[in-house]
Length: 292
Image (tube, rainbow, N blue to C red; front, side, top):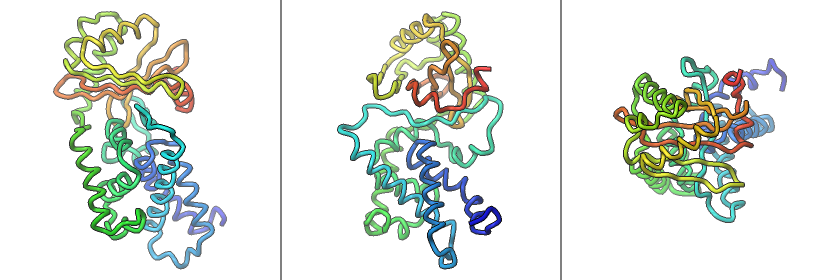
């Protein structure tokens, strides 16, 4: 197919939607792009004239590819990961990238993606396709080799898991920003008593350092403040940014990305902090606009 081919043009129109589906399914921007590219290769080999609904066909193909990728992940792992922070979408605090709009529609925060990580591949597919993209269960059922009623139950289990985890943050971005800026300033200036005002007593901090180091989970304001002291003593510099549509942080140490933090704020206090601190994955993120 050539650049002027109408099928290629139609595919490109669908690409943002397909990336959004794949990102919710996989929690990885790189793997999402791989899944979308594989869908294009399958379309290129198919008889497009026989496809009545190209958007629906492509959504189904991407979902099936992602399902296989999730199952392959589980097969490769000898044991489940204790903690995995999905790939964050990082943007300037005062702006957003139009290319990210489809990825971040429906406020797909890191907290929600982390709950999706706990679902089985079939549960995740059923929930994502039905609850986020309104795909009927009659169309989901063949993808997971279940009846429509069984597919409905898969989505329901995923929905209950999300409701139990309650991954929602305050929707007031300006309010979130004030809290996060106060947190970053207090940590940077070493005024740790000020952190008490912005940390919920039962705050949870989780850090994903990658496969070569054990993940960390801290609970309670005192434990998080102790970690902030260690962070400050290292000389890392934090920046307030948008992470998956909410307010978060990016820290640099010696000119290199040190961490990306997704922060949940509720009623004026930080209730959860999820850090990606895996050097290999951080190196793949486009954060040069912050370091400059």
